Length: 403
Image 1 (tube, helix red, strand yellow):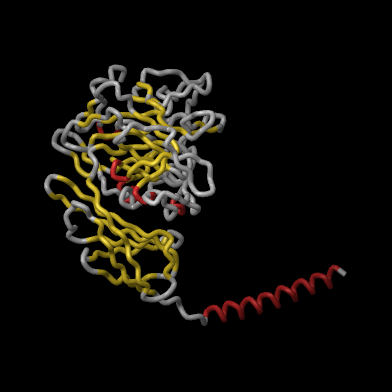
Image 2 (cartoon, helix red, strand yellow):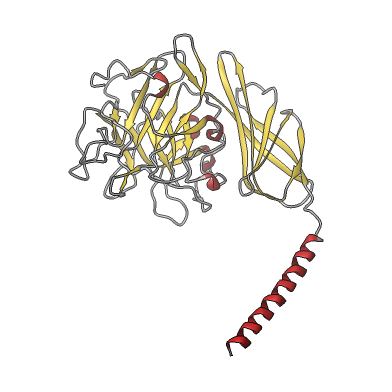
């Protein structure tokens, strides 16, 4: 009986092998996939910005890790060739120095399928000035303890003066945007001018009690909890000591949270109940801005079909933006308008104790660094292991007497 079963088993294998060979033979006869082309044109919304000299067009198929780049005249169009069928993110960008300012030009299309030849694509391109203040380094993903539990209270946000003149961060607001994490299900807003705003789930503000001056090359650290996170009762594996942070988003929800030397920021708008400052370890989207009028938490809006409260921030008040995602495969799930951030940054995981930090564009004779700010986080940021506050010799402001 065993021999019969064995013979039958061998016969099935032979039949399968023969069938498989025929199948591979059939597949081998299939023609190779032919490459496609697409025509890219732009619509410019420049405001008072000058016309860029040329535009760079980049097409990225994240699923296939395939990328194409070319340039085009801002008044014309360009034919992109050698496109393999798939879903693409298409980014148009440029930069120009004029009148003492640096202008950034950005626009994009995300989740664009190109499966037919000669596809016509138009991209809206806006212009903005590079901000004097910008996100220098952000540590959002958290870390793990010696017992492999998770820790997220060691997060920080470093804001840097990248300009040539003194900046005052009095009243500067840090906002986390809706949606909290990257998603294909974007909120729908009823307001007719929704495209002129970003919507925040949480807003913290530097106190307006006095001036907080920041010289060129200086930075402020905003900590979720401005403590030395390497303490035994916190997380000896934590990568940062944040006792020298200028500001903290202080809410004492547990006995572990102390009121540290850092200045407490003002909580202006917060969706959570009970309140806490919980930055998503999967990657949130953030802006810094100076509100043109006092933040009134009662003036909230809600998306269609949702009760989640959000606060509207005019795009023209945003000083800098940074969009983080969980991993590279979520790069096409953008939340932030391209005029603020045409790309994304990511550390690629959660609780890996890594940060994203801006790349150095140049180092001046006095040692002060100028950082990249093209309004495209994909290009401007890189992953750092471990996170470091005041990297590249950034200085603390003189009014920080506890540094």
